[in-house]
Image (cartoon, rainbow, N blue to C red; front, side, top):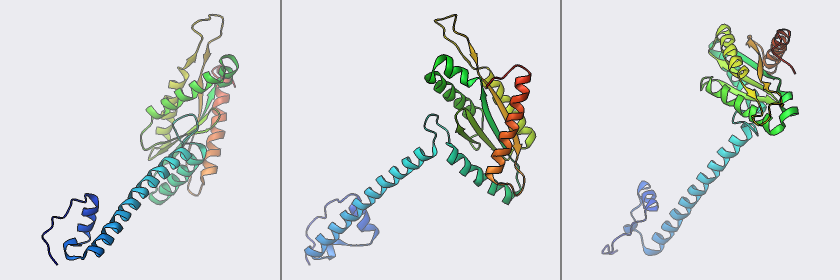
Length: 228
């Protein structure tokens, strides 16, 4: 077969053919056309697969994230808790969970409306993300409740972290600058901290942290720092 023609540059198609070790100059015209058509179809399928993978990744991200704040929703949070429990059980490393319930949040909605309440939730999520490690897990458990999982952190370290988070949230205020008659609402956070125990599941760990939070909220109410 004559080889006096110059082979066109097929770009990615040509790269695929080269990777397969195909020399088009050794094929007759009909076979060459069929191989080229097949390679184009393969490249089209590859591009379609890439688009589908990107769409799937975006869908998974949306499914995991809370509808309002840019952190895990409860379903994804509980899944990550189960994963961290499995790792802690396997490698015998410490694991703690902080259950956070906002104080005075209902007053914000009652006095300033739900848009202001949404703003508070966004600010709290920002505080939690900025003041925790990238390896920590932060999620919204519902309403004004949040959770933080601290892997490879002792109970004492987790207690100190809870105090830091509570202090940052306690500094938040909602006020109407245009009206001195509208009361200022000071946001706060009651944090319950528990350490994972061997053999304990995710639901039980979260429930213990929830109970610890209620104990802390009662203490703060007695001190005049929290209202429901």
